[in-house]
Image (cartoon, rainbow, N blue to C red; front, top):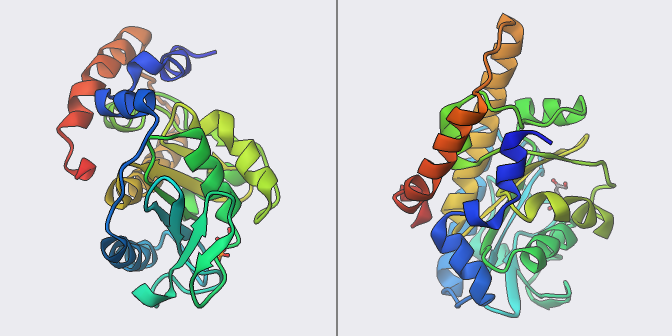
Length: 247
Ligand code: 13P
């Protein structure tokens, strides 16, 4: 196992607020109106940034201990209204909404069950990152200092059929200590304390995938060494606490 992977799997390397939230194992509630507005806004951004096409992708927010607000199935993320969102409970049962919930609701719930600190999940098909996932490649190489500081590393979860509970199961071990993962032959998923944070992490995944691809094409990648990685992981705690995307 690489040094970066070992560090990522140690809870003590988590940013302090995340580790704290995990240890308390509870979440507060957020306004449903704000969550509906955010899902519309960040869904449109996902589409505008080319991270999804057609009716791809889904987003959700944890409203409180028992309820998740999630995007409807089969809708363009560029054309959603706040009234389109669907409220489900933690078993995926629909509580309220005019549409059916995203077909990936089980994957979102698997993340919320695995990570009590997570309040928002974004799933997309960012083209370059998805190409890595389609080639059986993770984005775990320590190439960029910023990515080691912000996401640590981005693992690849094994293939599982889209829209099935198996997809959530394939992801659990990978998302336990990380906030982003690739899904083999499918796409990527990110999570965070806010939808803004989860969305920005998806941007980072695709941006890093483009850099990793260009570095492979140039052909003389210089990976960060264990000493440099250790220093970056120390800086990670401080960096994440000061990040705008936490708000
Ligand atoms: P939904 O439209 O059901 O959310 O599915 C889109 C998708 O990207 C499946 O992976």
